[in-house]
Length: 271
Image (cartoon, rainbow, N blue to C red; front, side):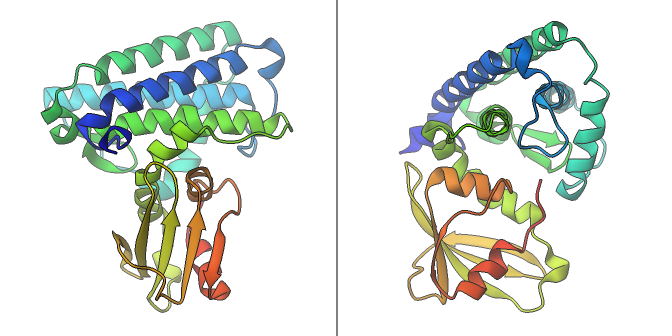
């Protein structure tokens, strides 16, 4: 279902539509005066900090696209290990901006980012390389996924802070599935891997599939393939995979060697 794969041009309209839906959900929650100082699932962050983080992140995307199109030099990427610290520092500089002002800035930034992504041609969607501040050069389509991570996962964070039962919307979860292996690649603690191993990951939803994932002190690789002959595999629905990769909780059904599965699940730092 290529229309549900945001890495392809055929999926562009779908992912941008779902990003807008998730953004509107966040706007509705964060616009409420009583929500501004409400804790979220992000440790130490209130709603205002999540909003500040997305403003800072999106405005960084503007600079990245300007540099990509103008050929300007960009700083070396920080790497995902530094991400939590640096985004917290950046968000803290904006947290005291009044709610009305910061929400207006968030909405304006969102529309500007849509206006950057929507006109991209098929060649630009997959071929325009734009330097991400933490991951380095990535295709332009990754920034649509970045917006979906910001608005989809952080909306989950806001709902989690309310203390009410809730879930991750299926459209957002399905679209994010292909990117979660890249998140795992960027967050694996290679220095703690004593022996290489391979485990299976099974995912349901519109981007369903079985993947053989190998971990060593050189990093993590993955490929579609048969998994039931492996010592262990973990089954995820789309939402559980996304929330697990982002370190929001402990999910998944383990088939086979429980110790190996837990070794895998504990091989990452959380962002």
